[in-house]
Length: 232
Ligand code: CMP
Image 1 (tube, rainbow, N blue to C red):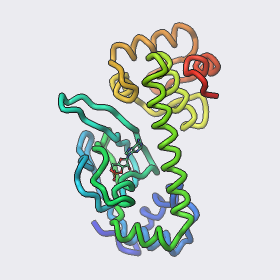
Image 2 (spheres, rainbow, N blue to C red; image 1 turned 120 degrees about the vertical axis):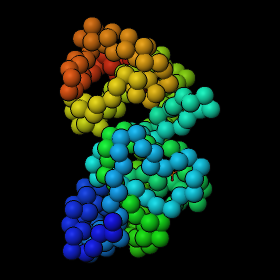
Image 3 (cartoon, helix red, strand yellow; image 1 turned 30 degrees about the horizontal axis):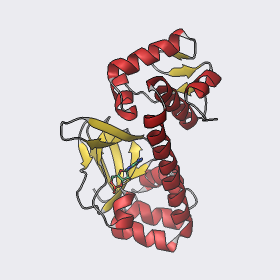
Image 4 (cartoon, helix red, strand yellow; image 1 turned 90 degrees about the horizontal axis):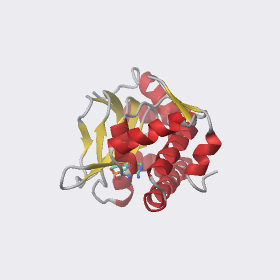
């Protein structure tokens, strides 16, 4: 559905929540909202396929998606989990290469889709967007560096501790409300569900974390920092 100017208010609200577009003037936001298309993806549907050509940028209005690589034997590595206000699909728009990974809905998700031309026009017209985009890309590179380092330098307990610290940082406090199964955590840190469950149990027994149905609370941040190595 193409959103008209009059009924694009919800798209404007979504765009305003996206850090990338937060500083845009109202007129630019309105323009983006007019050209954005809303799309719904049910849980488990594939939004982007690795190796496909890329012609659009996607913004998560609501829901949760995962960025994954799938091995020939069907095993998945999760590179990132993205939620409300996050964007993806920018890499192919920037370097004209095919999609670098699959993106799959983890929950029923609503997305806004911006076509390549519309996004690139705004990027050229608004250097602030370009700078913010660079910032997000650098943050993603930092995370990727940490993951690579963790795979080589940390045991599974350390990798779980580091992921929990990352999620707490993202949540802005000790309570992690993003709900990830042990299977998903295992796919994020290159381990098995059983090993992750054991590591989480150990962390609970040592009083480092508390786990309830709705959230994970970090009780002893310093202990997690020590397990995760040099991270402050
Ligand atoms: P693109 O390559 O166009 O399509 C797949 C998208 O997944 C990619 O753009 C990025 O938006 C996103 N992506 C790829 N790797 C990562 C990563 N390590 N962290 C977060 N997002 C990623």
